[in-house]
Length: 356
Image 1 (spheres, rainbow, N blue to C red):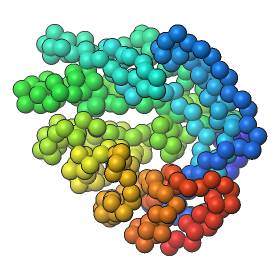
Image 2: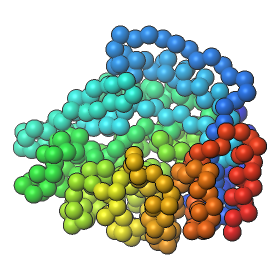
Image 3: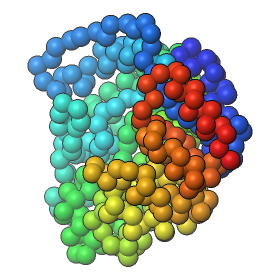
């Protein structure tokens, strides 16, 4: 596959495939995005409401295509567009109310009573927001053919999906008072999700797109980012009883996966997640106010010792410590803050290439 915004795509793809295997071709993949010297003005349009703006998918697709052309995808950075409809769009397709804000969207619970509402909260292929996401994906594919990569939307299945359907606080109570209802819904909703995932997977793969999403990794087969932000609210015991089985099945469903571990409250679940054979990598998000590679060296070392890949977001000043504390195999530098020119980028790439 060729993409005009990424002429050296095949070489970068080889590095990402090596990353999945925790191997090195010449160096770990490094994502560096620089502003293009000559840019195209972005179109403008006014709207009466946030919802009107979010759902103007024709304009959003055009805007995205132009915006992507204004950057240089240096080293292993990839020009990716994905149909962002907010982080709980899958839950909306299953019956949740959905509100669009300026930069994000949020859902409203639709299961007020398990007996009355539990069986109603199911995927609806006729839901207007599902149809909008399908059309958005199609439009991006038309704009992107031969130019840039088109990815999957942000699904948020599993425990986070149930938290949206039920409300996080109420779900926490349900784990004690209605455990069977929770387990049944987790199982049935995951079966639904796998079918929904494949709808979009087939759309992309039929156009020879590598599979990607809001985390800009790629794979030729099924790929996604398992997560459970709700896990910060539960103990290890409850996590392993209610949510771990579904995460294991999700990892088995994909050909490649990177787990989104969000916040210090989720760290207590890391050990058991690292035991999943089918999980390839971990995306550790330390949370606002907790930044700094040095604070989390032990976390990254634990992940690497378990044979999993690592997504790193660091500053330029932290690069020497990374070299001292980790091995290059299975490391992906998704963002290195402080690189603002090709000259600096080339120097950083040289240093990373020499890392052994």
